Image: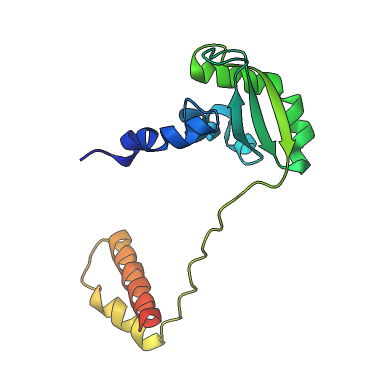
Length: 155
């Protein structure tokens, strides 16, 4: 069995190749290439090369949040340098900026756990009263309280 990280480039190669990303690593490593802050403001959309078979001096199309487009435009020399460092050769020479909202997947908020009654809290404390290590006892009590509260939701 292989880790998913080892097989992901093989699975996405055909899809990303159609969008001009011969190297899927550009999408996968975008945050590492340009930095987390900049990666939250823009995404690589397409990589175009001047002619078939030539894999240098390309144009990278980046979609940017309109509020940050000017700042990103000012950073294009640094982005070009970082992308080329990632590839190990002069893969891109230009950046084309497209303004628009970025797709950001919604994160599900964990449901709020119900409060345990005083008796339930006391039962948990009694359950772990024989544990001598204070830090361990506190952790076990917290775990038990969370588990009981979640069980109340699932009933």
